[in-house]
Length: 185
Image 1: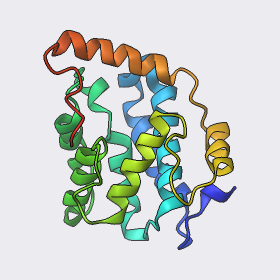
Image 2: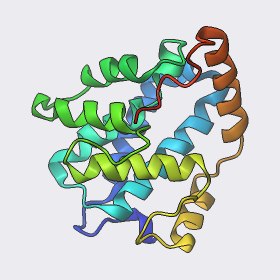
Image 3: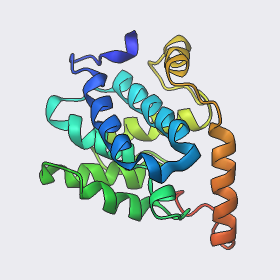
Image 4: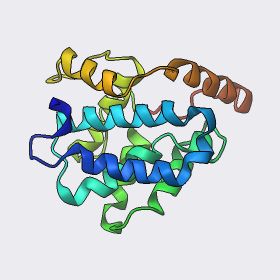
């Protein structure tokens, strides 16, 4: 499959192994959303790798950031999950020289505008998450619709929208004055 290897040759499977090890460790905390969130994380990882090279030294931090990017929803039962997600992720990063990158990936993944952090993986992650949220729209420049559909076949989005709707309703109850606290300009 085209999405299993990025341009540099580092396999997406290395990142996926990091992600799946974390899912195995936290499986019970996601309840019925486990497979839905896992598929979302894997789709995002695949889309990131189609945009930029993931060097070997970033496999672990990117996998950790990918796993935890929305995990605070379940791990902390909050819709205002960016900071809690960062806190969890930073405890799992082996090489703390990458803490800033991990934090930027998580905090900036819902930015409306281009990512502030200069590392290309941060912007690639932002685009990948946004594209997956809207099922391929807006398309990411350089990624064919066929590549996106291939990722969707491997990691289907079944139940993704209802899961997001449930989380959004929780957010409205939690903070009716700020129902989308994760959105940044």
